[in-house]
Length: 101
Image: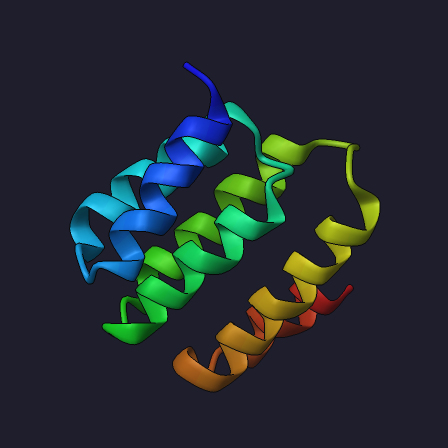
């Protein structure tokens, strides 16, 4: 399976409003290639649209973990956004502080 194919299907489905299918395809994209910032951004937008904040948190953690030591700038961005999610949606300032560090 190629991440590009799943990403294409996910974006196309999102454009058509087929959000469940889009989420599935974008998740597959990130499973195959966690560095796909475009797929991540689209997926987070879909989760935010329906206020699936816990799903967003799991996605951040899963992608950060999958990146390992790769894509340093992207990892930093994800940690910062995760911290903001903790503050804004969960009022969990202790977790936010850890994510900021």
